[in-house]
Image 1 (tube, rainbow, N blue to C red):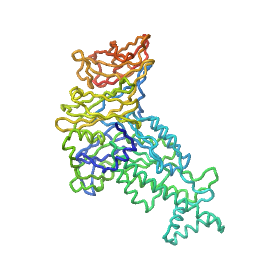
Image 2: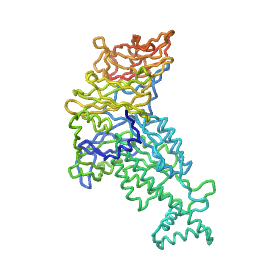
Image 3: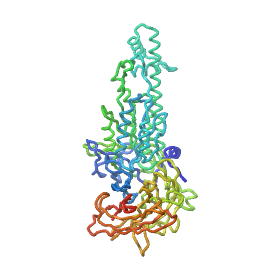
Image 4: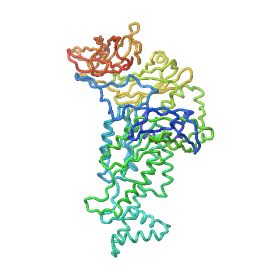
Length: 638
């Protein structure tokens, strides 16, 4: 059994960051002036320097996700009104998966109530994300993971809507500035030497706020000192907490986008090193930073005085956020009104990126930080890229790996960054059926793309909501099927199904498949996933690809079938779109099975000669006493 969550990954990430590929890949966002991804760049368009020296670029790969802003596909609808769009026919390790978003809310530096514009905009962004985009919500510096990384939008929405700002109030009666508060705090530190400039600044503050009132003078110094202390310690706590959280993401697959929301952080000589370390952690964890500064309320209706230097305060609080964006190669947003415009730009910017690859030399394989400067030959585009990299010497195989390299490698891949395992191209799909004990049987189909043949395979069903999953290794019978077919049992829920495989040439591959492990409702019945395949010598054989096929067979299971009343029937349809008219139809034969409330329905539709190429939609309509009670769909590729 396994449980993957950000909390567990935080512990796993204590291991040294490593890469298993020869090339260092630099995640790079390139956008036009209006914020849209540039799509036509090659190696000739990039200029690379490592530690100040020009370096050749070996590869440039453009990675595009689903169209930003298109919104997630709604869940499958099992009603006579018709089904929604089905998922893709299968997942591959040659196509990009969904994005990873983390909303990091600096609630200790946001005043109560001022968080709402950003929270509301973030919730609206959730509604536009695609089904494979994963989201987490964290509060910093002393909050934690409010919603673990998953595709569960409800959990993320609930976590966001529960966040309240906790920034300390400046003062109830004085209007000292941020600079004055920091000066008073610094002057009160043990061993500090007050310069004439410091003395004059404090004297002017006291005179302005209190005149000759000595009691007032003591009070304004005390409040300014406390506010200055809170600014210094909150800033350092936030930077350290953000760095620790980024480090926990190092073992997580792919590029991560952190939307960091704050009213402001100060910049002092004391946090220079912390900021440098933050930049290096962001590079190692492959984090993109989007820093969003909220408008800071200078005073409120409760009678607090406006600060003596409002513009100066804004600049002071902006400096730390600018530094965070700078050291991480990120971008700073300062929306003057609705925050949606910033969220829209982030959505567009993350919809595609480039992987710029170069080969590190032996001297750079020393586990130390090496600076990257990546620029563009074209001046009409904007670029954001990581600032550096660290890579150690090649790992030596362990004793266990030497004894059984295939088994050891598969275990590593199940828990590693699968982005590094693409030597063996794979595609896979997962389906949900019912087990006799009411758990969900996850049926997994996997096959190589090309001429390779799997010699070993392992599977992990990883919960997206923090529950238990399952792991198992394919046996000889599993591997003998084409595609490879294997199964495991889990509780109902949202899962990421991982397939890891090797072939006779020693190539490794891994692919993830998202699955709602649940039965579809067709009241009073329940229905399994629709499993596509073909009849071979009268036997049903599941398939992932129907290129060149003349027909498609679909198989479903019906559960909770009434024993004394009602006769279920089913009809199989092939269509060009989920709600479009059927281009081929066939009745499904229904057979009894055990237990007594279970039926197996199977039908075959011919593919018309003029059917469009690419993805089609296979639909199974379930009828009870002649009335449609549900529809399940599956995309198929021909």
